[in-house]
Length: 265
Image (cartoon, rainbow, N blue to C red; front, top):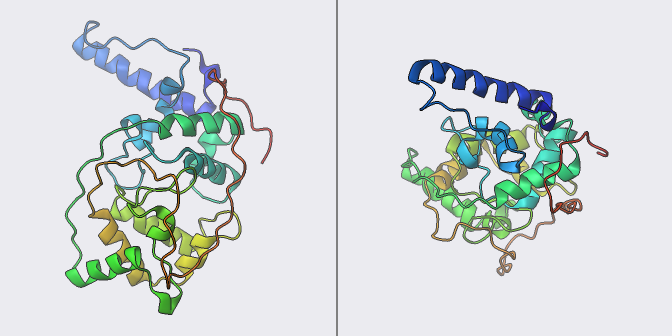
C-alpha cells in the first residue's frame, strides 16, 4: 500500500485494518479473507474517516461520532477547517486533518455530501411528555420573549439542513446533540463571527438543551432527507438572527488530489 496518500494518522488506521485482515486470513483462509487492492480513490482514502464515523459515514453506534453522509458539503468543509484551525476541539480529528490542504478537505466534504444512505429509525423518546413538548416548541416556534429563534429558521422547515452550509438536525443521537449544544455553551465550539449559535445557546438553559435534544433525536426522517436549497421565509413575530458567512469554498478538482500540507489558515 502506498502510504503517501495518507497522513500519518490515517496510515495507522489503515495499518490496523491490514492487521485485522491478516488475523481473519489466518482464521478463515485466503478464499474468504482476501484484502482488497489499494485504489487511489477518495472512497478508499475516506476509510480513515469511516473507521470512527461508521461505514460510508452512516454514524457510529456509540452516539458521539455523527453521521457524515448526505450533510451539506459546505458545512462538512467548514467543520473540517474548524477542527484544523482551533474553533472545534477534538485531538484525534485535529491530528488527522492538520496536514491536509483546503482543496483536499473540500474533496472529502464533497464525497460524503453526495452519499445517499438510508437513516436508521430513531430510538423512542425517554424523556417525560412535558420535556418533549418544551423541546418541540423551541425547535418549531422558538421563544420570542427570551429572544430565542426557532431552530427551523436556519436548519430548514424539514430540519434536514440548508445547502451549502447549514446541517440537518434529524438523525442525530440525543447524546451527540447534548454534547454539541453543551460545547457551544462552554465556548468549546465556535464559528465565524457573528457567531449566531453562540448567541442562541447562551440564552438556553441546561433544561432547554435537554428538551431540544430529546425531542429532535426521537423524530423520524422525512421521505426526502436531502438539505433544502433556500432558507424558510421568516414568519411574522419571529426573532431575527444574523450569522457569519462561511468562508469561500475552494473549487473541487476534476481528478482526485493527493493530500498535501495546508497552504493557508
